[in-house]
Length: 182
Image (cartoon, rainbow, N blue to C red):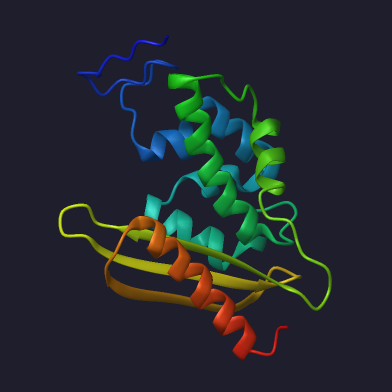
């Protein structure tokens, strides 16, 4: 059985950096650096890492050709890479590590798989606040190309988390049906 200790300092206990924050995990942490070195144009790497975090995310989502070597579907890849870098750091701290940048990139490329032509893919989620029982659900539908079809977010009221999940699936299917997908 693993034993976990609550850290009392801000140091990264994996690589020794003086501050372990979100910027460190997704941009400066050694596995993150490996990822970005594989995906970003060599002559743009310094500019890629220099903006503040909000501008950095915005630049990558709105102008992928500015930095990325291959900017086809880069916006989708960028988002899943951020999530996988977060997972990789948590695995390093709590479980088994993803050892290099390539494993993060490979995992990120395979999180979303396109459906056959003329299909849509719907991802939904439901959530419940424990303090008052209020719940909501939301979802997104994408064409087989990955482009946006529709999204939704609905406040449900008081219900279980299971019912919130079911509401999300039901609303997603209803919207797809009404959009002509049978």
